[in-house]
Length: 219
Image (tube, rainbow, N blue to C red; front, side, top):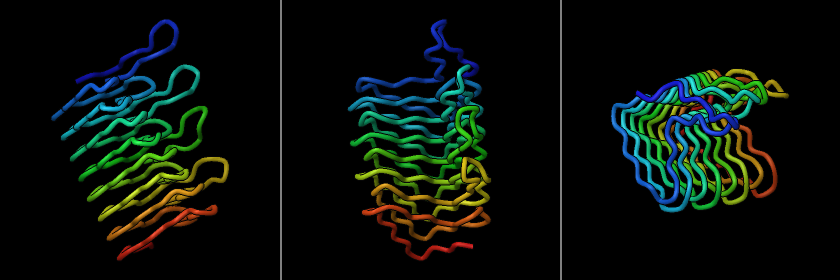
């Protein structure tokens, strides 16, 4: 159990776990709770993180209202999460960004992400800026504004046999969309279910954005 980590005196840090510079991390049956800014941060080329049966919850924003992410992966790092539960984090449950960054989710739940004081959204998943995400047999439930957001040229999001439901309104446009894909990102959705979201099940916008749906139910 890693919990209630606080920032330094200069306001930096507070992470439950930080992985950088090509380090390797494996967790099994662990819990990270009530940490600050980011529950788990993985960054840097060659950094590899494997999470199994791990809970990351209740990550809180800093005193100036930033962060609160359950997991953030960036800078060409790689992460795989299997049978994990990310719940009641702030602003974003899972944030994936930068070219070369890759995340695989298997049988993982991301739920009840809250809006932060600086951000009204509480995205389940945000993948952007050329990163890649694959989620299989996962559930995104009860997040705020958007269940899964894919944004930016070179960004790829693949969802297979995944349920996205009950996304709650939030943000300037009071959205509660199941999925949004925009700004030239590419989305593949196969065998998925989008249910009881608000405003729209899926929204695709902007030139060069591509969305493909196969055997998927939106209701």
